[in-house]
Image (cartoon, rainbow, N blue to C red):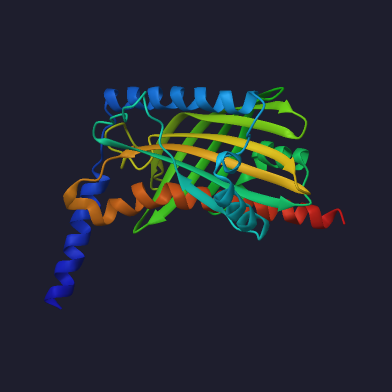
Length: 277
């Protein structure tokens, strides 16, 4: 019993310490902006010029064939990426960057179906539950959107975050489209869903997600549509004493969230294909 009580006490202390908050330093925020700019420059060159459009298309032939078979079999491809500033890695003081790319293939789906699904923001809470709790289109001007999304994630502890995001969609040739979605506000919510619900103040947040940018590509080919998402997430660093509680959020969650989102998008589009048969 004493050992159990000690474990409970340690858990409570660590949880309280984590909830006590972390502050996003100006230097880390500036590093994220630099990282995003360099990433977007590379993406813009890839999506607007002839040549490989998807990440897998630029892989060596043997690996490309292997990845292609996995996608055709219904799998999700997830890989870690890094954007460098010339030959140097970009430093994030007391913060971490999580950069992933993921792909799925949806047989029978058309490009327009995939783009329409991603633009139907009022339905995202239903399509991507339970990761998205609420979703609302705030404004639209042609192919530019302003969107509210409430995220809920749980790893040891649960965290709710309200976000506002700017999204832009583009066509880059027959059967090709892409988008970029940048968070403009990320706020952690305390006591979510209760009468005491309120926004945490900067410095009091856990810091599990300070920024989130996603870059999507849609390619109709091979009798279906490929969906690719490249995500940039900025989070707090992992303090040694709290590693066991914080590490699952800041190291596993970005990859798991991307996988979950792509799987849900694929499932929704497959249902759409079946409904048209």
